[in-house]
Length: 128
Length: 272
View 1: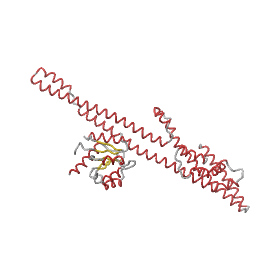
View 2: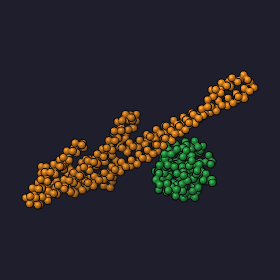
View 3: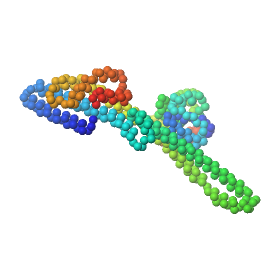
């Protein structure tokens, strides 16, 4: 796993963006950019250079699930691994995210260990 | 409306009902069917009025509770330092939004402190590393200079290993950082409650509009030929409301009463 990879963190709550950013930094990732919902995340993604996307589900304007679907439908972006970090914990929602092509799913509240475990798993699978 | 008023109104309604029931029995025993039917009609009307009045009172109570919520919270000492801000807040939804803002800014303050503390921890870690380097240099020198042996032993005695404590401290600070995610979860829940409060008030006001229209159709004829002295202030009040109906309807046609003032005006115009 490349620690210099560029990560986009998308959440409408600035507190949560900051927590995720700090945890990622703790895991050795320091190349992090932020967006506050799907609509502001898309231009950042389209500008290129994003290697990993971490997104919330419930956000105004464009939700995380719509962002996920949009990214998977875009030939330029579809390869980007996506981790969802969300309070949405219903079975149907997790299934919907999986069907839309999410690489990992973390339910809030979560721990630093869980974040590390899921990220490791995502990149192990991608490399293997 | 106070509890006493509600009690008095209910009591009045019961007394009225009882009096008319006796009248009805009397009319029937005399075989005066048309008059008896009219009395049944009046009883029906009274029940309708009571229901209308209760729905209205309930709507007013919910509305006041929503408005009062703001005032209650404003007066708590807990938030004295934020009083200026509170004074500018005029409704419950704004107040709840302010809770989101407040928890968000405080969560950020906590994260600021954690960031600062983590930096201090890494400075201390660097300090310990440098000390370890010095001791190692001293160890190399003492082999050639036996006079340094005592100094080396002393340095080793003072060189406690704090790496476990520092690791634990870092872990705890990360725990504090992670605990701030409550703000996201409470914030999402509060946003839903804000929506719920708005929806409930909206629907209650809608219900009042329907009740006013129904009242407009049914209440007037009875009010006109009911000239008995038992007619209450309450029914008079309600008849006045129905008379205002069309005017109010015209004012609110095609729009939703959205602001606090609109809701206040509407309830007042309906007599609640």
